[in-house]
Length: 71
Image (cartoon, rainbow, N blue to C red; front, side, top):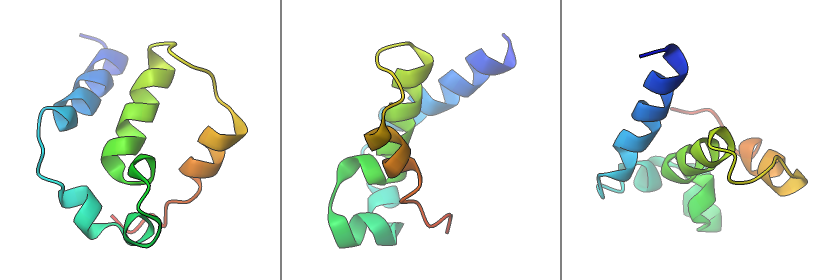
């Protein structure tokens, strides 16, 4: 398995859980209540980009830079 496949597997690992830990600990999510702004949402976005499901848009870039990098 190459590194990209390993990275995709790590992204998919988060989707199998429903702990919500990333939502509870994310100050941006707590303030705005937008699922794509917590880590699970960012992981889904990244996986979608890697799988070619959609393209990088201004909205995707804006969401990426909303992160405070606290975790």
